Length: 435
Picture 1 (cartoon, one colour):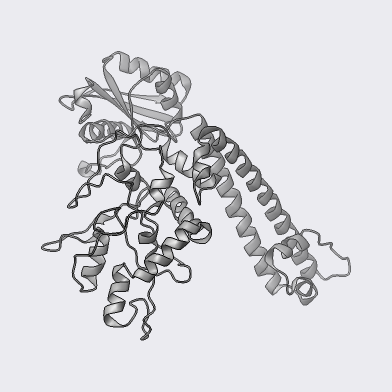
Picture 2 (picture 1 turned 120 degrees about the vertical axis):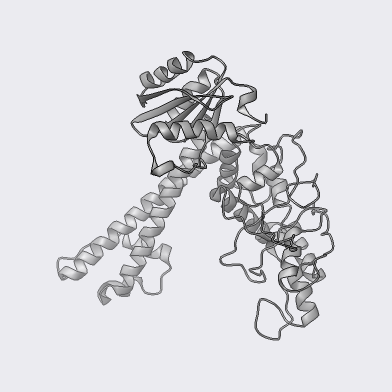
């Protein structure tokens, strides 16, 4: 499908808010406004929007902003009626003349933007995916709040009166939390000591409660993943949280068009940054679903530590010095990551683990998806080869340099890195993905 105008007579743009929804009917051929309506965000209001659309045409499409947020109720109603719904999560706003802005104008812009887009997104599915999304959000909040409570407890212990601090000296943080949860307030203590002990006890009990809540959510997540896609859990480095994050982003068959679309969704596809005669420059992708990007990063770290095949592959790639950083170090006698004369070289984590996408997205992408093509590169028919994330604290032996590899292809970002360091742009094609 290249345009909504090929399959619909009108497009209903909807600007969603907490209490009201504003809709505008736009002619799919001319872009003219046929009507506007603002209703309350209630079941009666949703039905009024359907009646409003019925009055104009039965051959229609809906462009709804925030189908997973303010527009969730309307999206569920439209899904039950088998309406064609296009998701506009982050609309590319047109320039507003004289700063004009209102909910009806935003609805009109949503409809016209849907008409202008060549590729349209579908809303995420409900059911198991939505249940996973809710559990992931609750667990993430519990983990974050519990971590904050432990940090606060540790800081208070450091500055606590000696009578309290002596009890915690030499203990790990987990032991501190368990000890603080059992503190008793002595009537002989002064106000500072008694108050500090009371706060330490409250923080410790809060951290333990939130930890138990996070564990309960993780068990529920594991049960849903096992009933939905148990095959993901058999992949190395894939646990219930990573699998749930991938499933929430993927949602349902057909939503992700190709491996290249999956890479862009995960923020793992390099962004072309060519200029003039330099045509192989790329930069990291800071966009996309950052939770999905983090899940893939977690899978890489787990494989680095526990997967024998990945560890053997890491050692082989390190010994062969295949990456541009190692080639530069071999030619200059120094490592580009250090200022000393050491010739120690470091593998690129992304070049080492270009097989991660292939394992994670197994059976997630339709097999009949068209072959993707990177601008300025040859098509790649093999597994998804993009994986890019910034390593804020790389483990020992891993450099901060970022490389994106294409299975069986010459790597675009390798050539960018080589060009940036003044080496020839042509590099040898990487070895096939390890089994």
